[in-house]
Length: 507
Ligand SMILES: *Cc1c(COP(=O)(O)O)cnc(C)c1O
Image 1 (cartoon, rainbow, N blue to C red):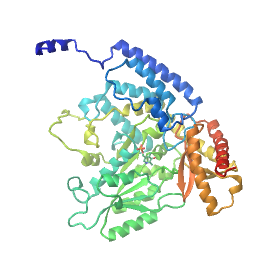
Image 2: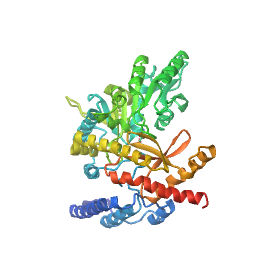
Image 3: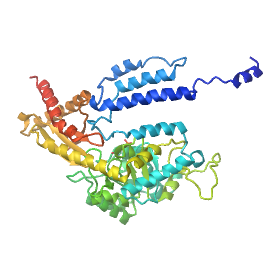
Image 4: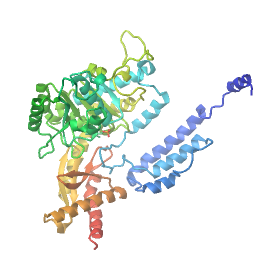
């Protein structure tokens, strides 16, 4: 073909990826019908197909090579919907209580479809005019909901880890006594000390990842002991900071947790805020899970104390029920966020306005950014403050009821109930007398029990380890859970526990 002929051929360009509007409409309608049917039947089935990795790979045909030629998208969507409906774990199932993974608001699924259809790049205002403004409003509404200053800076991230990283990096920039972005986080000429981070052992592993990734090293973390409620000891914190300061170390940040992953413990945030204020340290709160409970009128003063933090990480994909992924970082002083992240490359000229819009790439680590805010914003509008307060409060009440039902069952031993997390374990009737041997066996038994329960799919719980005891753990971040679901748990655990105990003791 000559170049002229090539050019002519392109006048009727063949684009295999395009769908004409009729084709899109038909395929979309079919898919929405299938999803609606799935949503109607899913709660009545099992929470998971419980298959092994090998079984799933076989169904998928994991080893098949990349297709050389294309296929009809409508047919592919039919096939794929089936594949997902039949071989997934459903965290939207009413009896899914594992980890801290919530049921997803249906409006969020529609929001994601809409967001992807417009496909704004929310890294620069000019690329995403209304989407950028919706993100800014979402951040402000989240702050308002939990009682944080509404003039804060903030942005949506993929989840709690990333939102915590944003707070950590803002702290690192604001509190390091040299230009840490330019010179790095290593102890500095003229400064004998190292940067120090203070947190409790109940803090989520993001803090290790942050210390590692951002150049401080995990040895920079001071692990402050906890009290019998697994809350950071403020007294021990005070003491450690004083000791380090006397040694010439450089304390920069204290991380408090509002709702720990294992048990939902809330650190003494009011006292920690005071200590940070006295020592001019950055106060960061990890509220990825529990932060939204600060919206409840009867939230504890410590939980409400997250309003005093310099930065907060909070996960809309937990208690706002946004479909994955959606985390949110809030930073009291918006300039601190800008200071921690902005560069001004010559290849970005993102508009001149009298009243400028936010270019989010200057306020966080990402460059191109998706429109995560839409699903959060629409759900906030669908139910309002009132709706969220009600749903979160119901989750907490259901957890309390679950704890009571567990306590009434002689073969179950309850441990903790905080926010919406309950921990407990299965103890066979004849193993009540405490001994190391019994404890070892109970740990083995309950470890196996978690796996068996998870694969069975009747109820899905995960685990916690408290003082060396391996426990079952149910976390209700699930608007589909009812009292009946919660009441069913003890019977199921005891039935499966007995069966397993029988097998393990060779009866
Ligand atoms: C869930 C959670 C995280 C991690 O959040 P991701 O969204 O999974 O990245 C961090 N801290 C706490 C307290 C959490 O509950």
